[in-house]
Amino acid sequence: AQTVTQSQPEMSVQEAETVTLSCTYDTSESDYYLFWYKQPPSRQMILVIRQEAYKQQNATENRFSVNFQKAAKSFSLKISDSQLGDAAMYFCGLGSNYKLTFGKGTLLTVNP
Amino acid sequence: EAGVVQSPRYKIIEKKQPVAFWCNPISGHNTLYWYRQNLGQGPELLIRYENEEAVDDSQLPKDRFSAERLKGVDSTLKIQPAELGDSAVYLCASSLGIGMGDTEAFFGQGTRLTVV
Image (tube, rainbow over all chains, first blue to last red; front, side, top):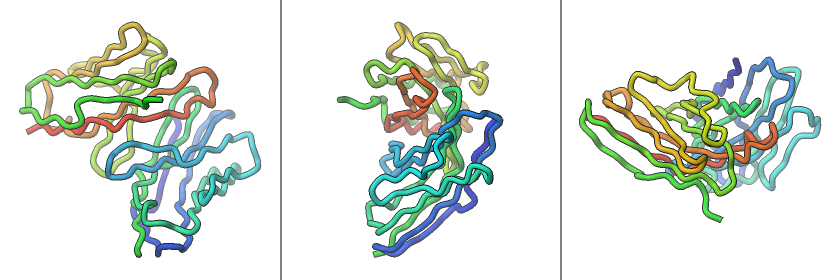
């Protein structure tokens, strides 16, 4: 079984500031991927960033970066220079053997 | 390229009535997922298809839920009869399904079901 835990139900950040969303996971698989998805009010899940577990280098996508600590089974998302359009639910996901498991999500509010 | 298309976007039905949701995945994607997302929760897998074969339906309540993916393309998820607790958003997703990395799934906009 694989589990994903997001311990922050809600977070807020000022526009242009930096915020970090936390995620821990557990899996018995040696090969897996980690994802962060964004879900705006439109409900469509949009992939923000992905990390291959076998890679030591942390993934980055423009203003989004992750801090992947494999031994600690931690996978946090850092959003730099936050924008109003970043406001959404963010879900951490763990994928292995075609099974994709999500955490309960963190609601991010961006204050102007 | 068109994304994952789901219909309808909203559905309100009375309890004990049947309901069906339709999903058209991204062209060429072999793997199709149906997820249920309760309010304030993350999506939970109901069923996964590899082409037309349901390879993981362990979380599908088989007494009232059924799904099919004829010809390995479009899929339909049905609930009969619906219960109040079935109110949720039903998300469809697809992935290439070639390598393990293709658990990267692309999602539709979902169907919000309200059972009254």
